[in-house]
Image (cartoon, rainbow, N blue to C red):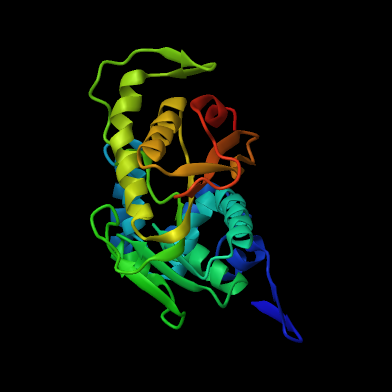
Length: 292
């Protein structure tokens, strides 16, 4: 899956590499679901349809789908729903790696290891590890790859090693964040509607997440955090958590990433490069954060 010219390693782009792993680009969501179903036995298909019904009715989180795949092909078909986001976040993470030049990388919430495999393809000399709480996804990753893989909830388990770069690329779901128990109110912060109570109640989740990532860094290590912050309350809660831990968002690499879906809808999410020590220009206040 790569070209060798003399001593030079020429890596494939993310799109071509992920396609080789089974990510599908030319099917609609319904067609992907049909292909996904065909990879399971009739009895398993009935359980999957029941899971879909629970999710669509609001009785279950979409994260329940992550428990279903047991092969790379099954996982690739499931994650193909998120292919556009995968591509743009992978490109950003690759830029970060070129900038900070880590010798060791760990991905928290690595899933079926598609990003891990691409990073190994691009940076074969870098030590790569991954952690995910879904045992089925960890086991689906090919065993001949030189990865250290850990099945654990990284909010609860301390990893034994430290790393130059910790990646969390959609390593959490909004459904993981406990809902606010405070009375909702509306406050405008630099032109963005927020709920102060939600901001306060969301902050402990982000602080726990970031503390888990930071605890596995070497002294000069970095965090590459990519996620869907659905409103300004979440963004401010994350920023407050970062400040409370004494770490900083680097302004030179942090940005809002945008994708355009086939139906024309534009979706944005945020990518933050976070350092334990202030390095270069940093995001100093909420106004600067919300302007990304």
